[in-house]
Length: 241
Image 1 (cartoon, rainbow, N blue to C red):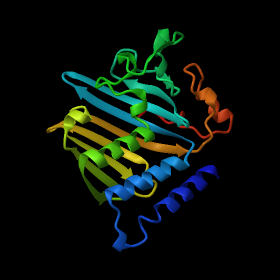
Image 2 (cartoon, one colour):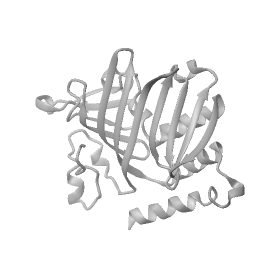
Image 3 (cartoon, rainbow, N blue to C red):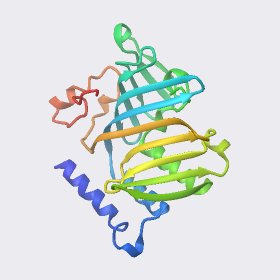
Image 4 (cartoon, helix red, strand yellow):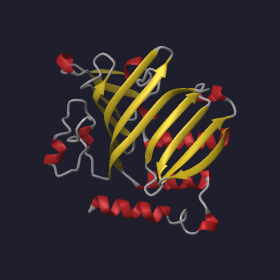
């Protein structure tokens, strides 16, 4: 029931965008609708696939991603190509710190580091709180002020393309593309380029919204398999592939 109500809420939020052909969506109206959608939810889960490049370094991960307001984030890495990635868990609780533990034999140990510590970021230095819906909203608002912005709609997806006038203010990235589901407005994928080189790719799927995630989940030693026993829908049981 909770999930059906959330879907209905998304459709209501999108009504102004689809009211008539004469009022075709714009980049700004899509971003505003995204902001309303984000403001309406309390938690979400999804499967995240992330890949990025920094010089000769390459990172690739498949992640179970959990978010709860005010800004609790948990990432369970199901597969990764960096040492100790697979089976590792990281948690951010809005305090600038990330608590994490590696997979494997050292899984009983945890460390807490600054969110910008290389142990807690991607190889491109993206922090824990640069991958959630709030970060997506902040990035799009940055581009509204700083970039040339275009919108296209293909196969039920809004594709927003941003080309910053000053890439140095965008970590050197010359083009960002963010794709949103045209019904729910939830992100489907995003890509970033430096010139003609793709340097960042992310894909999100299997969303569960407003399932009622407990605060206990945002501890690296708490097992998300317990959600099922609490009657809370979870992405935990999804296969990694």
